[in-house]
Length: 147
Image (cartoon, rainbow, N blue to C red; front, side, top):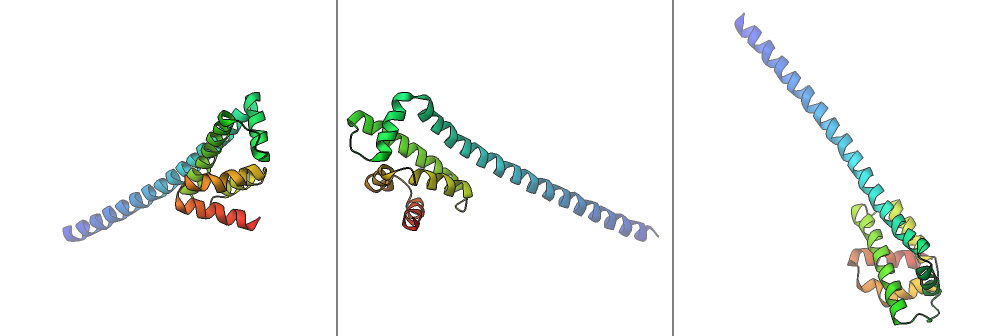
């Protein structure tokens, strides 16, 4: 009889342990999903904030507009500011892409910037493609080829 009680107790303990393991696994899955969404949100909001710089700085807006037109009218300092903005913007897209290379957000933000004007494509071909990770460069090259 004691053996029977011990066996039932072991089975009950095993079942309880399994139930706790299943519960903890489901909690970890929920935490991972929440963390993934939070990370994606932080990365996209970083892009939006960076774009806000352009909107709130009238001097830079002029530089940006002339830069995307690719008309060659930027002086050395203005060209530098435009280059820094573009590198930073694409680095933020690269972060999204690194996090999830199938990210619809990375695709959206890259296509928005690539479609803003010929100066962006000139900047990317002359400078941008040399400062990013090879896999990301291939990703952007494929987007440009699709246009």
